[in-house]
Amino acid sequence: MTLQEIKKNFQEELKGIFSSEEIDMFFFMIVQKEFGFSKSKTLASLKEEVSMGESIMIHGCLNRLKKSEPIQYILEETEFYGLPFKVSPYVLIPRPETEELVDWVVQEYKNHKSESLELLDIGTGSGCIAVSLAKKLHWANISALDVSKKALGVAEENAQHNQVEIDFFERDILQADSLPKSYDVIISNPPYVRESEKKAMQKNVLNYEPHTALYVDDEDPLRYYQKIAHLAKKQLTSGGALYFEINEYLSEELIELLQNEGFKRCILKQDLFGKDRMLKCSLDE
Ligand SMILES: C[S@@+](CC[C@H](N)C(=O)[O-])C[C@H]1O[C@@H](n2cnc3c(N)ncnc32)[C@H](O)[C@@H]1O
Image (cartoon, rainbow, N blue to C red; front, side, top):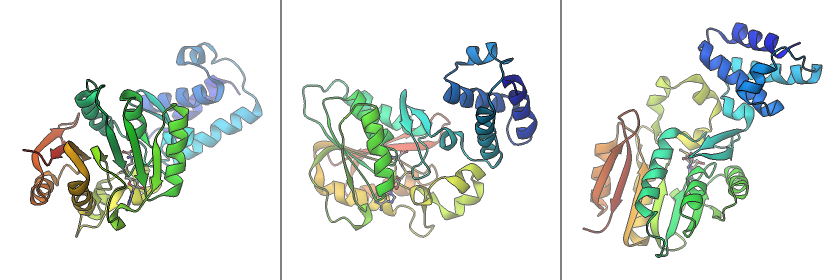
């Protein structure tokens, strides 16, 4: 079988599920991963025969795409903030909105090189936030926690792969009485999708991404924020700040909750799509 025939096969088998452009993109991504070919090299090699083993492997990927499995899990990798990350079904696939949160922190601290900077990422998952911050704010001391041991394993691999040092530790933040030390920056993208919002979600998210990373009860959707704010109140340094990724529908309730916890200067930011998505607050006037 030639690459051209496989490419055609992708279009035939996946039409109706994805757009033609998406299908081609998946084909090129899979060929890149398996053969190391750039898109132009793939296009120049379309007439080449692939071995039986290679063809079986590519068709395995095609069958997974047909079941709406995210391409990132199939390839076991993704890119975040310009860096390579390994992903597995134990971790959430890093989202572009989260890159915006990381960039907010990077822009605010990139010129503070002379100051010591203690930073904690709560619910690190793949480690995308912690690793990106460690790469860009290389003088900072970065810690990151998660309740999932398997997620922490992936995060550690990502730190090694990107050559940064991070102090990872396993902790259920909802059960924590305190944090290990004081921090200048506490950042978190905790679970925030209400059970009732599930019906609006795509099959690829619902069926494949870890539910502990995403969902919260309708009755208490801000419980992670409440707990983190409560802990941060005691362990943010003077001048320190809390940064959150948030549920676009709950920004007002969240600001009220944070103000009730004693936080001031809540700054809300919208994501690329104009939705309330990020919030910064501090204890200082
Ligand atoms: C929305 S994901 C964010 C992952 C990653 N930081 C990102 O932005 O892509 C939330 C993360 O919180 C973790 N988590 C859920 N419940 C937790 C808990 N009780 N204590 C600590 N981490 C928790 C999940 O395992 C998951 O990795």
